[in-house]
Length: 330
Ligand code: BYC
Image 1: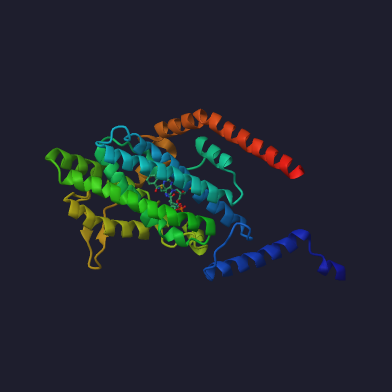
Image 2: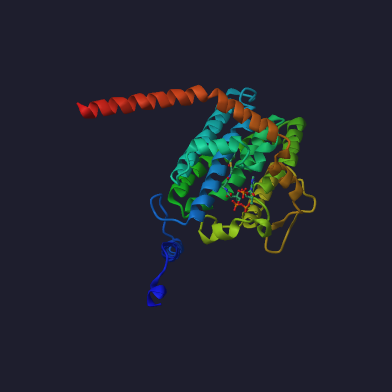
């Protein structure tokens, strides 16, 4: 009878131990301490970060496609060099992010395979086509502008490797945003035809860019836990509003019109925008956006064609390992 009272199973002990660790973990987060790869973390924290960081990495890599489409058609050597550098930067961002995700125990191969199998998401925005040169201006101005708004707070994310990767990414995104705005300024001050092209690109990209920030707060399933863990510092709607408020004066300076006739500034100075078509967002996430099929096909083709590079890198690493073992044995 007495022994029964003391008879807790290993599983119960583990449960108590995990609860104590989870409390200590949350206390570290609340104290603004950084969590590093070898620190204990709840499995759900590891899962949510692996999901977010890998989706972010996939977005950077898929995001090279719409702009890469214009490298050979950029209107001057200067534009070509800047665009080439920007697209290379996006590739670099993907690599830092896969490396950050790997510190959580998931290999880059397995994360990439999930994306290629259609099981991991990438940003909805990259499922829209780049029809004219003005789209390249709008992507830099608005897509990178939205990315900066979302990523600056991620520089203070609780997970060290992600937060540190974001610092460099944000610096580079800032160059991208200016590059895009300068293209828009040139077009907006150009001929009537160029100005019309700039306006048309703004009309097509405005609403998809607002969707980049994710579903409205009441429909955002991960926000509560990600906020508690200080992965997220602002909600999807808060960042969307900050972006709109920052962008309206930039559009005014360009002399372009935001395609939202119902938009008005409230007494607090915020720009109130009309309802977003969340059905379109859901369709794009479900694989039915204008370019989902093309983007996945292009990624799968690039992956298959890069198989020999991965094999060569493996063979070289193996050769180096052998050499090092042989040298150590001498
Ligand atoms: N597109 O609970 P929620 C770039 C998903 S690349 C697709 O609010 P969370 C650039 C979400 O994943 C910029 N899916 O989620 C590159 C979740 O689905 P799962 C990419 C979206 O994570 C090249 C579900 O909807 N930036 O800058 O709390 C050239 C519910 O959402 C989207 C990042 O990845 C979307 N737009 O918040 C130029 C930033 N939105 O996973 C530029 C890092 C939501 O349950 N990520 N979903 O199946 C984040 O900050 C957050 O993950 C989000 C979403 C704010 C995007």
